[in-house]
Length: 104
Image (cartoon, rainbow, N blue to C red; front, side, top):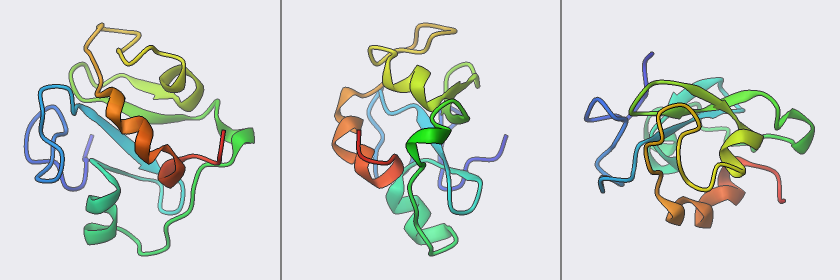
């Protein structure tokens, strides 16, 4: 699966590259995966829009470790780890949820 902005096999990018930065978001506006909102601004469609709450059961978050696609609800309720492989996700990503998902 292609992840725009990724610089390694676990979807890390030049903006976020800690050991825990291993998710990619399928952006609602262009239906493409990006490593982060800055990668979307740089390489994306230019029309950022967030996932509406009624679509939170759609698969839109990719685990960079095992490549499992999680629904938004699964991701938000995951406790910051992949439900499939157990890889830890960066809890700091929650600061950017408003850029990806309708306000909770």
